[in-house]
Image 1 (spheres, rainbow, N blue to C red):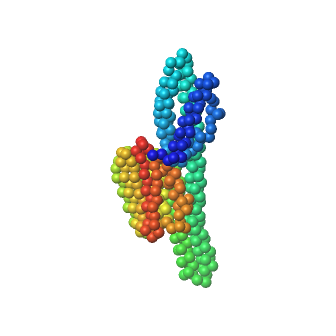
Image 2 (cartoon, rainbow, N blue to C red):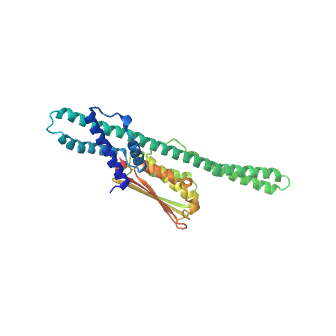
Image 3 (cartoon, one colour):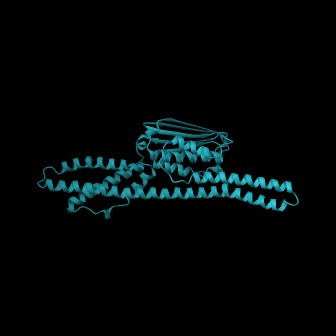
Length: 321
């Protein structure tokens, strides 16, 4: 059952379309698109927000045209000018529906573009934070140790030698972090294998203090390259969050691909998401949710402080193709 607000919106849209038909019959002229209300724009934005695929709107428009045309044509039966009136009804009905579809599509696209911009800005902030925390920190430590080496090299040569070793370790760690950051910035190419892409990512990050287990079930050919690409980014972000924030000893990644759906989960046994860490922008949850909506699916996050976190992705059959 549709939500009352959605049903009210659909009824209002149908009434406006029929008003256009009546107006065309009265005046003999089809209304131009400039007379459209904001309703079509609102419908487009609301459907984008709900993750409803544009195909659903096209199907609904086709059904409404067929359902409305029959009773309208019957109402004109017996009129001497039936053919002329029927042409006006059919043309005005098609024009009104098409105009609203075009307006809703423009609004749908604008909403998604705004979302993409938001996700891109969040990604830039994440990259800036990574560069500051993971690269800047290491460089700062190395610089500090080299300054201490210069200070200690004559008076305390042993300590000065330790300063150099610490600086070398900091530089090596910084280089590893830099490789990881740059690997995430490579231009996206269609994935040949979702499983291999995830294994490649896991090889590029530091997992010495956590056990990571990956299991992919099903035939990856059941999912399109676009779905695999976006799903990889979602799973990668979930794993990255677990590695960076969860303080977990175990991370489980399980992906099940079937002809009718894809389901995946990234689960850890870490500290969970507490109140101060629940900002979805900071943890990249917004980015994952928007990517899932783009696929017509959904991402859900469940967590309890001290009991770990689970990030689940669901993509239905329609979007796998």
